[in-house]
Structures are given as structure tokens and as C-alpha cells.
Length: 250
Image (tube, rainbow, N blue to C red; front, side, top):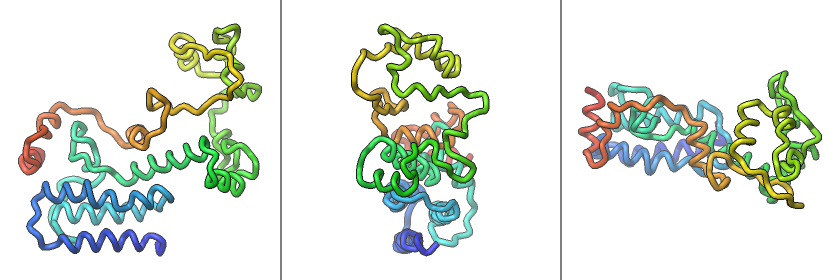
């Protein structure tokens, strides 16, 4: 907890500097979105904090939003987790720091696996001991061993070209090593790569160009609900926040 006291204090100091000012609910929402939620980003980019640390920050955000004060007793019309949904799914579009933390942790993993930088080299030497990161034991085992028992893994395949025959996919082998729906999708929709001496390159499937972005990772890992047409009629662009907020409460 000592490690996170500094960020807690910074957020608390910022909130106390706003306390007593005549802020509308829309003004408080704007300050939370563009000031408070951005303050822990640097920390979350470097470490994965305990759940209770993020929950404490969320509690401070919620108290400020509903009562304009730390420790305020105003009624909370919805939980903070509910508030952290896109507007078309039900609320204001705040970002859950739990989801942001997971997305930034994805970025760390992506950099560790794809970029030969000093940090990734150090982490590999310290924790992987020259083993592939996918098979390094951690708690109940490595990621490699977390696959279903009936999942077949052909360890002789090291490159995409190992499943290409004469400029066409080796369909039988793909069907053997991948789930049928995935193998069928590859065979029917993806053109085999031309023969090359280059090694395979990592490709982020969430983006058409294959480049990693935190936004796409966040959109993949975040909690979500079904879109609701009612909310799209409440949160209309250009409509004052206090009116949309009143309609939501009604």
C-alpha cells in the first residue's frame, strides 16, 4: 500500500481543491473524465496494482460525482461499475480503471513478446531463464499448459510457411492443429504468404494493419452490455449533460 500512497494523495489533493466550488453534475463528470482518470495512467502503464487500490480510487471518484465532496452522503443512483460503460450501453462513458489496467498490461505483454528492447531482455533473463515465455511455469503452470486437454499442438511448426504447400494452404494439417472454424476461416479467406526467408512477424488481430493500440485492447477486455436504443436517445450529442442526466434518472 505504501507504494500507491503518492497517487492516492495526488487525487485526494485535487478533489479537495475542487470541494466547495459550485460545480454542476456535468462539470464534475468532465473533471473526472479528463483529469482524475488520467492521473493514474502513468502508474498503470508500469505496474499492475492490487484490486483494492483501484477500488479506492473509484470510491473517491464516485463520492465526488454524486455529492461533490469526499465522504459525502448523497445517494448513489448507480454503482461505479455501471457508470463505466459507453453511453450506448447505458451510462456516461467513464472508464473503469480495472479495464484500463488490463489494457495497459496487454501493452506490456505485447512489448515484452515483440520488441527486443533492454526492458524486455532484462525481464526475459530474470523470469524466463532462456525458456519461451509461453511455457514458463507461473502459479498453476505456464500459458502453454493452460490449453484444453484435447487441444493438439504440433511442436514441429515454427513458421506459417510450415503449413503452406506449393503456394496453397496445407488444409489437412491446418484442420489437424487448429479448431475447425478457425482453420476453415484461414483456408477460405486468407491468402497464403509468398515464400520468403523472413521469420513470421507478430500481428495484432484487433486492428486491420496489425499494429497494437491500447484502445483496441481496452475495447476487447472491457466489460460490456448489449446496446440499448433507449440510451442512444438519451445521450444525444449537443444535448446538455444535466438534461440527459435527468432523463436517465427518470
